[in-house]
Image: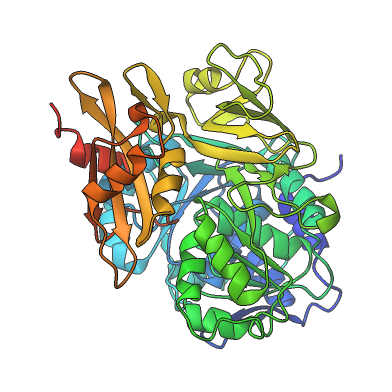
Length: 508
């Protein structure tokens, strides 16, 4: 059989000159393609020496480094399953993941070894290594003793490559299982759709415990044989400076906002750049417009999930349409997307409903949760994303919010993204979030939480009064609070569950 191991496909795309620079770091280090080939072979041989069953889980909670990237590739190469864990997770969360996934190997930062090793021992995981972001740790020390040649494990499309745990804001975290076929099919589609070409250079400024940085950005560069400019920590000034040597940048909205605050950002600074991509959280129209005005470049916004990798994208090629702010573009080639009502009936263009998808990129299910997996798929095989949105007559998809964020007030559906859009357009408002809280009369009502722009003052009561002249009464938030910042996760998404918890007792 043909080897469907994702690593084999990525390795086949390495340039002929293996001594060319593959990764240049913000610490002044340079790694060649040969370095990646040899280091991943040595790490794969280390894993092989442990005599692990094929498909063993390798749990990794370390700071971003090129060596951590190599560990991911080595795990694929050896035929095991990569389990990336957010560096913000603490002991209770790590304990849950280890008990649930039962990894054969855990790799952590040396500073966390004490408590992580105790959790590992209690769960029966015998192999615990350390890996630091300064190229030290027991993993590298032991891998250095291993040979630098390794034949990639022969795998099929359906063999597991990774498990990504969802954030767990509505209950227990679920492990989304992604196969080699899921990841490779999506990477190949994006390579064509986003116009990757010889000579492209990617600024890699994202974490690598998440779909965006680990799969979308990394696979894109590797599958194109492209050099990466590696940023362990995002620095807006440095990112802008490096754009003179790069062509592609992928970021979350927060990164674009931080770069817009830099005086050095202008059309000249981005002259060599051909593509700016944003995802992982909604991009405000103001940010979209400000970036275009300052740089002359239009950000491409796309939409994906841990369970599906990328689903939709605004067009790269102008012949396919314009990049529209506030939308996430069209379904990618090979991806089916439909919007349905509560009864599962497909809705016509422009109507809001639940988004369902299918395609070769869609995961097979949740790790050890067959009931949850069955619940999230329809009888005819479509995955219920949990997102609410609409598709217009041209085919552009707009995400209105998460179904769990929907507010039902007095029997009427209130979509937070709609109200947030009106609030964000008001003078002095930088950003807003609307959440539903319990109410004795209406069941649930909206509460708005707003951040003011620097140097401005906004008034919550004034915002509510302005909304009353623009929207139906059932959509008007009962209260509006002005705060210094909104709670966010590491990818910049506003954590509405924390806001709901904070304000749940306002009216009851």
